[in-house]
Picture (cartoon, rainbow, N blue to C red):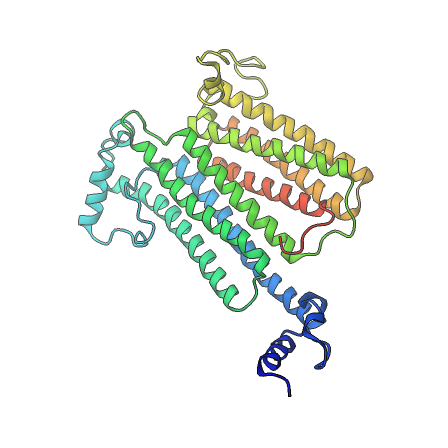
Length: 384
């Protein structure tokens, strides 16, 4: 008679479908993914996790759009307190509204920009920032709740857990960076947030979105049957890197409000390179604080990205397989649409609607880049 420990071990093996025969030695089991039933269960689990991550990525896209609208309407400094766990409810009494309004009246933005607009005016800018913060908290609930539920149901492969925990940590860091950015607008010399902190906050949002989407795509669809043209993949990486640099440069345009100057295209003040490009000292400050230079750099990077994307699409149409070709062409179309939208937004002097759409479109360009890399990736790890 077999010992109880051996019987228990063999029973557990049969439950996950890894033993071919009851008399089969335990050390000659198939791996779980070699068994059809276990492989099917893993596929269902991967699909559930992928759809969850795709949903969270969509929520991040909405968050970026809300952030753009909040910035463009001047609403971002209306809430002077950071309450990540208790800030779900808005003010429920007139006394609470007055308390928050009194806090707002103490910062430079009120004294220098909005002085005299009253409690009703404060309420108008409050609600958009409130929605922005609550949506961020909902993203946290969706991620943590989904992680716990899917782990309890056995849908998450152990090899995937480190990446999911990394995303959780980055989400927590992003919440802190959001407050770190907002707090910079309380300084005596500021009426808006620091451009440097804005770019840091926006860049983290891009990173989180890209990781969420890349992981979801790898779980939801199989790897390409064959590796793509290595030159096409390298070119896609190069153009994608240019696109990301353009987005970060756009963050400095937004943070310095450089888009409200030089509202002509393609020339700036009748010149290719605007007058005063290098006026600040030390010279490096021109890259982040000189309005003319900041806008010119954003234009230049965007143009290089557009030219590179067109070249990629042309190369893909000639030499790539159908799957890689469609992904690269889609990426190029998104880049071209974003370029055109940027020009229109500039010429119309950055209305809130177009400015918000332009920031949101940047995330879609990033999605196109991630999708193209996934389709051109060739061999890849199953869970990450």
